[in-house]
Amino acid sequence: YDLLRYVGPYKMDVFNAVQDAVETEIQYYDTEQKLSVKEYDMITGEITNDVCYRLVDGNRSALNDEDREFIKREVKQIVDEKLKPPKSRFEKFDRVVCRIGGEYGWGVGTIQALDEDDPDDPTGQTKIPYVVKLDPPIGRLISVPQDDNDICRPEVCFGQQGKGDLWFTLRCKPKRETQKTRRFGIGDCVACAIEDAMGDYTVWAPGKVVDVDYNVEQDARELSLDWDWARGAGVVVYRVLLDTGMHVLVHRDVHWLVRDLALQPAGPRQSADGTRNLKRLVKRRRGDSDWELLDHATRRVRFQAGNADEEDSDDE
Image 1 (tube, rainbow, N blue to C red):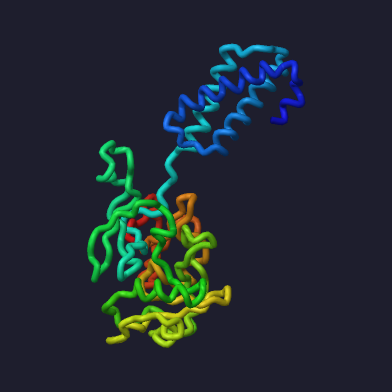
Image 2 (cartoon, rainbow, N blue to C red; image 1 turned 120 degrees about the vertical axis):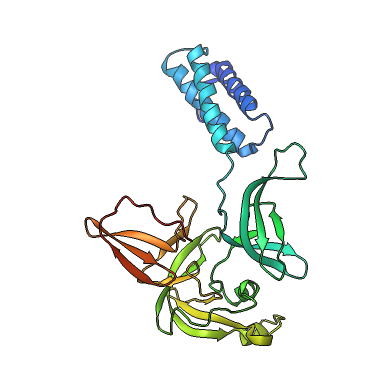
């Protein structure tokens, strides 16, 4: 620690006493020893230095009750923060793609529950981050053991990382296409849901529709992807050229995957700070006192006079 050069060897006993007091409190508040070695050393060094400086500045050589209370308070605060469970990336009814192994590899579905008790843990202390209902033809509930992108990732418009993401597009594409009328045409400016730079969260990325009802079969064959191409299985609703120069494939014509860029500006869609921009109906201010209601599914905008205290719709 840097403080050693300041207190000098003649006060090493003081330094050691402070460090012992700090470590005692850490062990008290981290009874299950969940802190990493790096975190343990960081807390020990930081609080030991703070307390030793207090002693040096006060020309004291022993801890008093105020010092011990300070150590206890600081250790508890930092340990609690370090051990606080991370906030779930997803919420109930979010659409995700999960690693399930077997012949499917990955399956797409909807989150049904969060932080469920693990039935394999008799103590009840272990939680399952997500329970997901997979789409047909699998159609069953699965448990997601970890909130990790290698196991559970957001369903988005795949393809911005290259043709390798085509596999996820095919896996997420509905088996039957029920919507025949397309919301957008070639040349329309849209915002597409894609993964952020780290892959854990999502953003709305601007781009332009370059193909409608685009058939990916040839692309897949070039990648040696084995698929059942019968009954138009390779047709996705849109291929979009993002402003970054990359193409993404829109496998479903729904508002939570693709929106009118005039109504949905580029920016966060789901982020670590809690931002969520997925609602179908969004109210925004128009002028000083009036409002307008945006419907991202129909692309309609309805004027609303006053009523500024109304709540936004929760329809996603």
